[in-house]
Image (cartoon, rainbow, N blue to C red; front, side):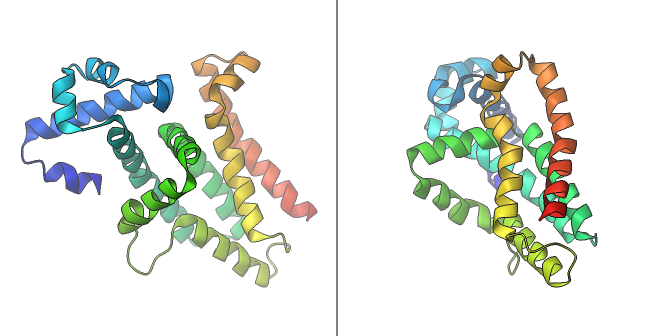
Length: 220
């Protein structure tokens, strides 16, 4: 959806300016959070004046939403690719965890946006998914979380997985992956991790979440 919007802007200068603004916004949002970020800071980071920033994005909320939609637009196809693979269900779960964590690592603004929208009211977040994100899902296909639940349930019927509630399994996977990004400042303080050490921690986390889920299913 974002690509279509950029293409409609008409010229390369507009596209270049918009790209710089979005890159600057991601950096400022991650550093200051949604509440702490200021449009002037984003304009300074992008190397433009505030009036020009408002010409492209009328508000901080709109800019935050576009940054989020851009990230989700890149994440969803990666997860769909994993779920479309012909893999044994346990291997598919491990692949899903790996790709999901890698995508969160590449787009850490996603957890920040979700938390911000939940604080404002869940209806706002649901509306964004309904009106902005589902249009990028081909007709007849489902969002990755729905599809994964169905694949887990199908594997259980085939006897490939124990009767562990599929929806709770999904929530366990998502929460274990997303929490370190939501709590990053606290974790970095408590565990004494600089930015490089935190990135290494996430690399380790991929294997640890995979092992945790695999052992949980074996003990179910």
